[in-house]
Length: 332
Image (cartoon, rainbow, N blue to C red; front, side, top):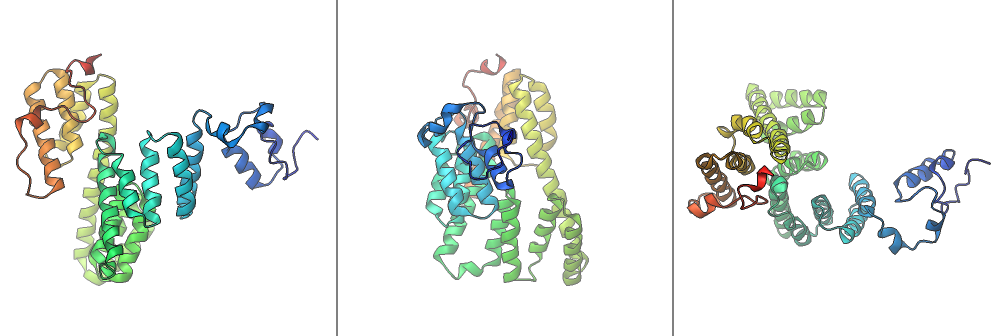
């Protein structure tokens, strides 16, 4: 027969993929996911170690870990992410997801250590800060059973999860918060944001109606105000991504142009770092220095509110993380 219809012939993964068309769905998924090469007869004799040495093999384990996380199978996810990290621990996504799995298994110290690998990476600054804070809060909750019933703590965990890009975990945490206190207004405000961002406007509308019954027009006004703030933050993050592309392409004026509208209303350090990078490359040293000072000030404010000294001239003049000390470097 031209087709491989025997579900037991798993070892024949050197065969072309089309030969598996009439097999079970599970076999077909396995064939598509395994790091394999069509028409390579010698691969059937390869050891697992040799398979792991394939270029990009870490992606296979990373993807399997992602599947396990979606199924809330943290132990399986941890195993796959550890395999991916063993093959390539220089990929930020791997260390981030490894930390997520460790958090799911309540291995908070290990999770914090994994997240710390992201320190100093500009593009990971927001998720890194949220991840570290979430893991530390969860550790405190685990150490003190009384805090486990703190509705504000679970609400904060949900917010941090959302900013980490994990909407499912945000919803799970906010659900815990609502069960702890069905009358805590902020839970409903936040859930409206999470469901709206996830494309579930009807669910969000029903939540607004419920909040209105509990709190009146005040709930609607506050929830809508929060939505506007969240939308502005999301717009900023997309703009930051675009600005990084422009800077990499040497389009410094374009990067500065799209970033400046956010400068008067947002306190995101990366925003001011990128403005300073663009202005420095354009030769506007005074503006670059001013924006570098703002970035440093906001970072100090985030670390310990009101307890840090004002940034020094040295900090203002220092290049941002990942920026060359050579002002001509970005022009090449």
